[in-house]
Length: 244
Image (cartoon, rainbow, N blue to C red):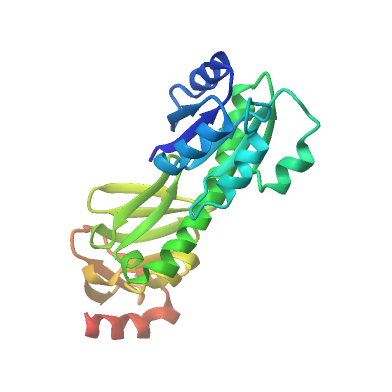
């Protein structure tokens, strides 16, 4: 998933440099402005995820623009790109999530955008849950290296945690997300825990069976190999199969 950026700088060459630095990344520049007033109008119209603002611009400067932008119903994250280091306090008073000094380095720019993106993703997820809880149950929002990916729940077979990541096994392949099983389980009632490290989609539960060593495992439709069930979860899984 590409994240959408808006650039405001009164120097065309500065805007072009930022676009070059972002070439080939997961970030798309969807709009540009040469002053604060244009930035406000463009951001209201295009609704980018992140605004990259110069501070000293003719007319309405970046700080004034940021104040108005932060009051929008769904404001983007704001990162200041400036040649001056004496506006740091003012920048964070308008809720800026980044402050980079020119000349901008690619590594610093990408890092600042990544941090700002993580913040806005969390905010958007909470907003979705508050405003449309029924909709959020129809798909899983996976936080991947390329951004958010929506996975329809019927396509999910099971999820398995390993170290700091969770692999989502779907009908079409695998997706790696940095969310925890606990968080995913709390958001989606159809995903049931069968093991400390495993959630299954109850929609695909087909059978529960004993293994030769006395253990218990489940079989899922569309999955060749069975999945082990922890002893403490056996009773719940049996009830789950009866309701499926």
